[in-house]
Amino acid sequence: MGKKHRTYTAEFRDQAMQLLDTTDKPAAEIERDLGITPGLLTRWKRKKEGRGQYAKQAPPSSEPTSAEIELQRLRRENAILRQERDILKKTVVIFGNNPSR
Image 1 (tube, one colour):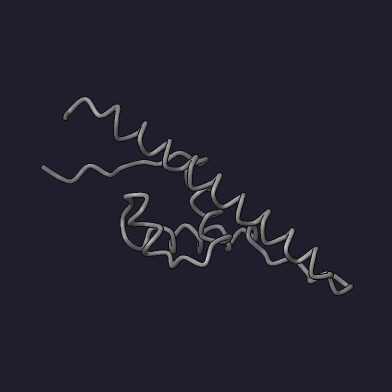
Image 2 (tube, one colour):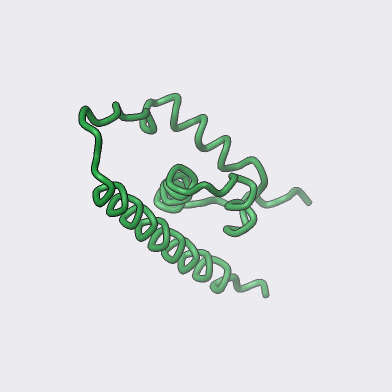
């Protein structure tokens, strides 16, 4: 019998890609944390970049102050933590509803 391929929702893929883009964690570590196939995030990223969805934005024209930099860092960290939490919640739901266990 052949292997069954696990399918992921578009929302899960987008959140995993967002996590990859907003953290300093390597793709392999995120893949292990999410329990997905090694190399899958890289393939998803290449596919998305082909459509231009993850194009880089132009840098701001003026230099931010230290308070603005700290605020940006904290907002980014907060967003990352929320994304990780949401992805882990969905992973628990996906693996928790497996009737073959």
